[in-house]
Length: 162
Figure 1 (cartoon, rainbow, N blue to C red):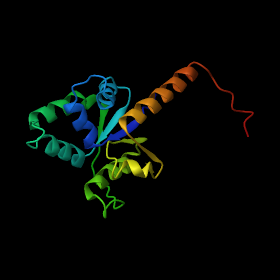
Figure 2 (cartoon, rainbow, N blue to C red):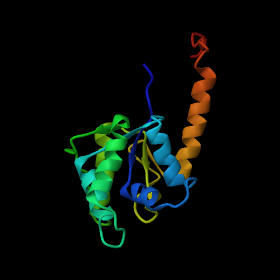
Figure 3 (cartoon, rainbow, N blue to C red):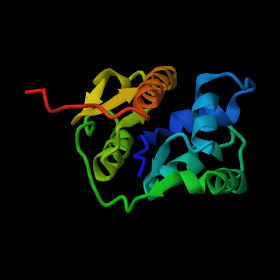
Figure 4 (cartoon, rainbow, N blue to C red):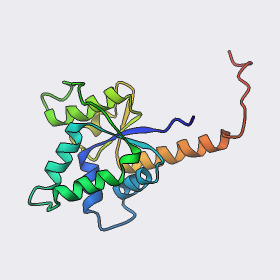
């Protein structure tokens, strides 16, 4: 059974993909890869509700139906978690970003994908979970896929490795 990369996508990335007029922007490409089933997104109730709340604010102008339809369109490639974990790492900076870290811990995610240059991206990693922007994720994901494909048909003898 193939193990897929698991990533928590921050609201900032979802919103950037909703708003982008370019089909080649990194946030749009991340969502395209998600739709194609190339990796799995982790979604907690808190992340869904925040994405819906931020997207439907007057300055962005999206409807709740738009957000629900979007998530409905990717549901086969998302893992919905309970959202019971809590995290306090960013309490003094931005409490809402703690839900992203908590979701990553609860789901044992490989990545957090964010555009938050102020709070999340400076951490670079959190408990062995890489925190990257969409462009970095696409590059690392492409490198991972290349390596995986290169070895998919080979059996590697590890008996000599000590």
